[in-house]
Length: 219
Ligand SMILES: [Zn+2]
Image (cartoon, rainbow, N blue to C red):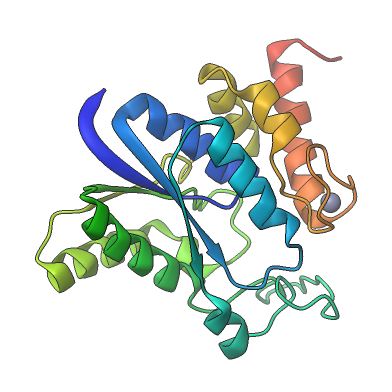
């Protein structure tokens, strides 16, 4: 374990909670940051708070209401339906979200003396979000370092793995049951296995079933 400090960008969902467990294994000190941008469900913030407390991780919640003001979309407005047309970005896309979140995470990292920033972005289950791409993260890493004359390292442990492999990683970290029961991925705001029907639940469930099958836990 590196005797260094990391900030984890943390939403209380499956991916970022897996990253939080991963970071706790990698670094001697870990803090989490959650962005409050008027998510569809306030449960998301409450869920993140609860997990950070249970894992004894100092937790920063930053107000990003501004993002909702600039770019209303299906993740922030209940009246906007979640849709994904062929060849288009899904309606859940929030333009500039990771650019802003990771920049603020960098400023926070600087304040708390952390060199490492961990984010659960991933190119594999790619919904077409341009700011989840590896090249964007690498580019932003350079920009952050130049902007603050610093040497941050952005870590993306999930970048090249799919949902089944993310469950496998959770299992290897001894956190599969915890993540399955306590995290919130569902667009309808239901913790754990969720509503089972929204796109986020379907992706999560498909990955979990694939992993459990591979492991031999289910037929
Ligand atoms: Zn759901």
